[in-house]
Amino acid sequence: MTQTAIPFLFLRGGTSRGPYLNRADLPQDRDALARVLVAVVGSGHPINIDGIGGGTAVTTKVAMLSPSDDPEADVDYFFAQVGVEDRLVDFKPTCGNILVGVGPAAIEMGLVAARDPETEVRIHAVNTGARVVARVETPGGEVRYDGATAIDGVPGTAAPIGLQFLDTVGGATGAMFPTGARLDRIEGVDVTCMDVAMPMVIARAGDFGLTGYETPQELDANADFLARMEAVRRAAGAAMGMGDVAQSVTPKVGLLAPARDGGAAAIRYFMPWSCHPTLAVTGSQCLAACLLCPGTVAEGLLPVPPAAPAQLFLEHPMGKLEVVVDYALDGTDFTLTSAGLVRTARKLAAGAVFVPHAVWDGN
Image 1: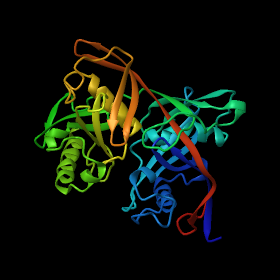
Image 2: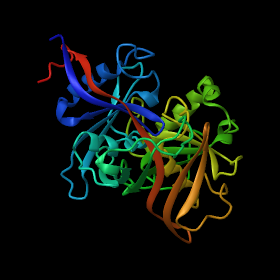
Image 3: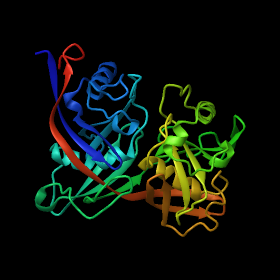
């Protein structure tokens, strides 16, 4: 054998896609695991021609699942962000869009027994410690993928998957505001450094000389802006206690602007070196919390904070994403209880993905 076969499912989760693997089918050593994932995706080439990646940051993501030892979870979800061209693998962040496919994948893998007509899958996000409850339609004990739910950024419709996120505060840094302040001035820019589901550096688009309504292509072509944003991100990462983040995809960056299509705000989300074509599920929770919390860079975008649970529509380049946030506000004291949203997923392929024997012999 010149290649090693690894069983896999290939799913679209939300507005991302990637392989879903059983952790037991992979090397336990982290360095060896990274080499395997680089080979699976085909990292090191702009279109991942020698792997199953798609040449963008939203198509070079990997989910690894295993039975959970946590008594409050059914399955552990371990995420890896594989670089498109740099052959780097980042195990620090999680991904909420790929998480959308975890419930269906866990049922398909036999890690969770399906119930009729709906199966609740309790997920432990290993990278951040967050707990998520996914509700998957399983009529007759089989995952249903067809349905009438549409999400912006994905053509057609599919079956809804409800997600309720718990324990999302401080997963990466230990605090909602890891710098100790709701507003910091970093590299001459006012930012809010916030850790809710995803550690983020949030700023107003206007403070970078932008409108906040630019297309992802326009932003990705703006080299001066990207360089300035990266300088802010690295300095903020250090201030958040995350060390040198030059080679890490976290913290992510979000830019805010006033809504112009009836939503709560216009969002541009960075992954972090290119603009997301839509909006990350995890990032949407952090941005929603920022909009609701007094004293952040988002103050004033919502003239009157809505009553809890708050239904916020976040405008992104391809439409809107709805987030429902349960929170309490006592004066300026802000407490986040949970965040929920509805997304869709679809199984695209199943079988085995192959890596060269020289990368991993399967032992």
